[in-house]
Length: 614
Image 1 (spheres, rainbow, N blue to C red):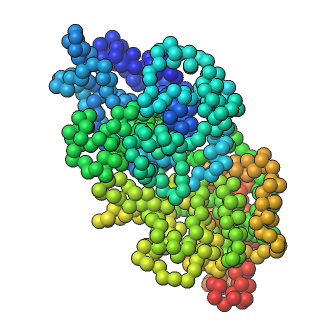
Image 2 (image 1 turned 180 degrees about the vertical axis):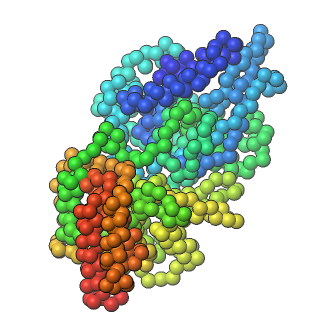
Image 3 (image 1 turned 135 degrees about the vertical axis):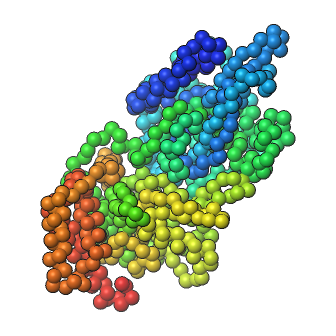
């Protein structure tokens, strides 16, 4: 790939001299796309998720698994510019594509008629919010397992001296030399995972300031690289909150850091003077902290489970039985709650009918102990099973102080992230056991309203000050509460523990330790894979369901409503998918009715015990 990119740069020059095919660029991009579809070839490309940017070589091919947090306004750049040799006065046309800074070996003629101004789009991308640690670890191990993988260069630093072409060739053909350099950095000969952030001394020196840059991550406590992705074609195919795998050319030119800090520099385009200081700081941060990635190829990810691509299918019945047994132990012996939890974990919004999202299955698991760490332990179990998740404690302080809904900052001309700006299929664990007495202020009321809209309509209304903009989403919401939740839900299950371990934390920890890594990965594949399956109902089964519904209402019309029928159909769909079936059978329909009867009977029993439990 490195050799190809060098050839691309040469071809840009030749094309400007009319000695190269005019469609060279299309051919190169097609070559990249075809090669990168091969998993083995893609594994050779170093990832910004795994390797700190200061260990990567500038202008090299890298990849980034990311989340589109914001889209900036389109920008103009010099697609073709002309340089002049001061001594010979000879002129050469050069391409400005896939670059941030013009080649300054010669003077740039800004008045030439041969210059061409083009347009590109900029995405502000961050790591996938709430991505589970096991996803990061497995992705990193995959990237390191290929013996042909190119080891990142350690030669980059803000004041880097250029190596000769021969030295570059030597380092590329002898990666063991780079491994030795990496070992020196870590102080041992054993390869270790590189730290994910630049050393503070390097960061501060590069940025020229001591105050940290706000990387605008949606979730608090998140770490990892942020990146400005430059998109040259078909940017309308992508949207905010998409998750992508981007392959592109890394740009970390120190000049970009100079521009970001020196607002009066002659390097700054006069047209940029219309931008505020805040906008310049956000849109042109130091490249050492927020590198630029010039997109060659990208594809939208349907999931971020690194175990799924090589797997075709797992035995649905066997995986379901094993997972059901595991979660039954986690839920203190409650098999019914465990089965509904599995249905919740494989649910996803598969379509929308008008404003109604189809497929969502928000679960309220009530009866959770109030004064214990059980909900935190339960979340950790779920986090080990699914690729992306976040636990939101619904304390009075969080509700009154957290920004859940993203808001447009017109001064900096960017979208300020919020906790509810999440990637599709993220699991949001709402911990209502942290509720306490107190008064919700205006922020708290807005946050509760936003959570209700998310659950009911799978949408978040982003705040653009003068108006709200609706962003559809696909977020699995699980509510853990002591009594029935104050928020709406699609299904309410009251937890009925059959066990009373003296030490809950030790009990859950023992269950997790007893689970083998191979079985844990089997559960992860199972849960992610079932979300991708198509599903249908035959005309024959549809007619049988309609007849059954009429029969159920015959004796008591109030016994089942249209809402109850809708929930029954959702449960039947998820039960079918849970065993790998893509169509509804009579057996699965009867199983759904049986489960719902058990659940509603439990709820009725609880009403008799506790009158304020609906």
